[in-house]
Length: 112
Length: 113
Image (cartoon, rainbow over all chains, first blue to last red; front, side, top):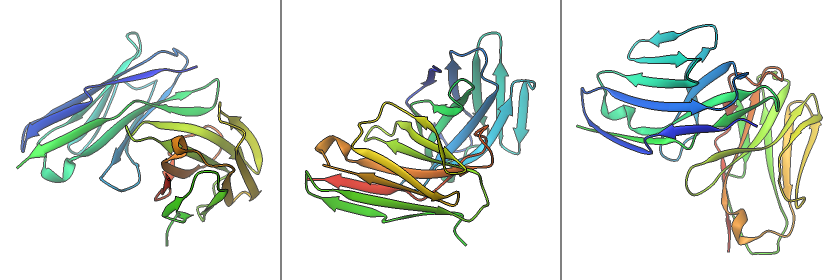
């Protein structure tokens, strides 16, 4: 089955700085890669996703890049704000099991 | 209106008890899921139903039994609760079995004493 590794597990940045979270996946047949944000005590919510036929996607301050050859994808947050503080999860669609496999999460803390 | 709602939000119970968690979605989605989030925040799929049919059944103890009376509802019944069952259980739904864009419920924090 699919295996998704996510780094770093914690990330602390100053307000206004950029943050980058990286994930690798094992199943070369995976073709959908979403990112979820989970605020403390809340549900995970989709913030951006990318498909394997696209190398980069941007939505305001967040962007995701995908390198299919290397089987890794990254989340980039620019001009971070305190409200960006949360746990971020990457995921990959395991086509064999028809399920999303999640990474272990990154706790991002933006210091004001 | 809440898209995916689950009850109860908190569940505190003794070891050995049997408990149920209910989930309902009003998005018209065909597929529903149960995910377990442990104390380290790791999210792991447990079950998935598509139009009331079980399509994913991970390596979960058979003390856990999902039931889907219709495609808008997916309940989770747990028998003989153990300390290790303590976690947050999230219900989720998506349109179709291609499993894109999961919509999560607010979670049920289960504490087994």
